[in-house]
Image (tube, rainbow, N blue to C red; front, side, top):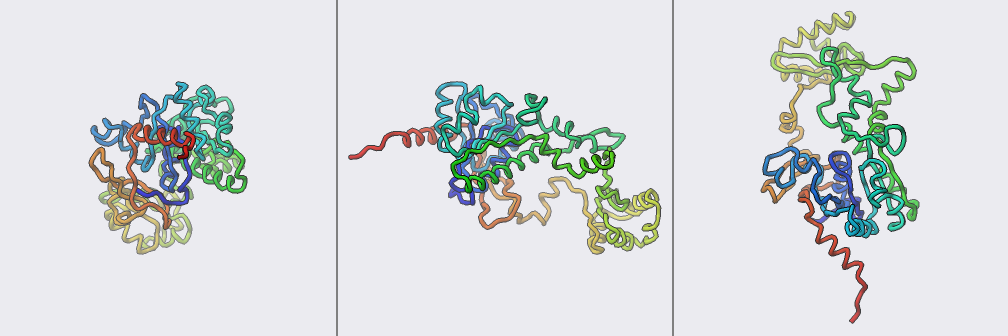
Length: 385
């Protein structure tokens, strides 16, 4: 499959594993970069055997892995061995970007750290993604999404008094940090265009990524001393006309944040008096009113009234929704090892150069011989007849 896109010709060596780093490099691959996963001989990346069918997991092609490794290559190297390290350093001399998500200090012990690599590639872009960054009292601690959700303040405002703090249902900290890494790497490539001979050292902290995402709440606390608590489904706007409501057959989420939206909502319900009612009374009345019709009926009524509202759907229902039927964010990916063509995530934005067909994800070590043999042949002296 011919690779196109704005990053065509950019080579990325990917030492990351699990979710955040591979998600970021997966986005680069979808933009046209050549992404080479450097995998350990023991083939122990957790996501290779996570999700999907037993047959998929047995081949190291679990659903979690397939979702973010389309079009990458896979090379197995033992970085603890002299041979493996030497091969990696030779590859790094041909790379534009190296990404890693080891704990601080590991790359130095392995001899694949930034200071070593910049002697092999003058303008290398070297990016590290860790839980807490390269310094500070927590720098050496391991961190996963659940830990970060607990530490960053997100869990403390998710849930109710009855449930206690709750994690968001998906590993949001991984994907937020991964998207931050994408932004950092794209910015670094622009910086290299201005200063083509300068190496760059990037650090992405999952904790910093998550806390800056919640800057609104942090600045409110800084200026008022108030903290957002366990608000359940209370809207960001604090409007009594926004939230989650039970209906005759399902649930509805409504966002009537502004006075104009609240007016249109109350008019559609034939209850304009609620606009002047105390907040608790308005909320109680709305809960009772929405039980009178189905979620689909209310969705139609409120759409007609130009009030933001939607039924709460499962992911399965969302993927089957007509809105996503022809979405370019989801493209076919044929994975020959499992004999399936899957509808897999592509780029989450629209561009003329975005891929229409996704290349398969690699089995572990699939490209080792081809890439190392090509590297050896490139290093061999040219012979003339």
